Length: 240
Image (cartoon, rainbow, N blue to C red):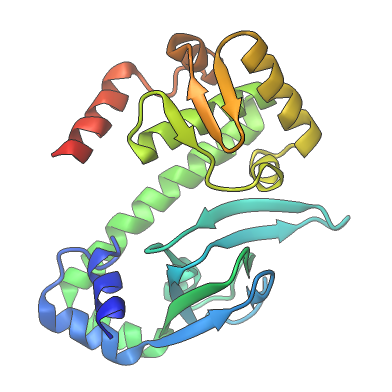
């Protein structure tokens, strides 16, 4: 029980909620377990609840008519998924699959909507997170449609730096096959881009760890999505 309560307290969906609200959310949820490569929900299924990851990782993806997979999001511990469709009272617009053995805290829609009606502060938290998700998805659409693949790779590395609050060394949070799908390319092309960036002394690849050697070149390649001040402010917030 303690682990689940800590999960709810740490989840940005519920951050800052009073103790009673967290108790109410905890009371309506259940723990679910999924094996690696097990489907959690499929595109078109009724969105009757959402999940918060306790351990493991989950990918959200769509399949083209030819069977090609396009990863839309990858989520890890403490992150919710499936909530947008749930609150719209709609069907899931994409598929969700565990990429490793995964444990989630599942919250059913009807009971959660009842809590929302009783607690406006919870509704405000949801509005904030939906806004962030929308901006994140809009950025992804722009990267896939307007940038060449090297620019998408550079953008991803800068976003990862900001997320991990590091300045020189980042750790890929997915396999290179998954990253290629997320960036709308294939693993072979991704490997060639990493090799070219390494040859040009922009980065140094060490397995899943990537050392940033030339920040200015990386930002230029990305189209300058972040300025140095933005990266520094993110680091300052983390230290604080």
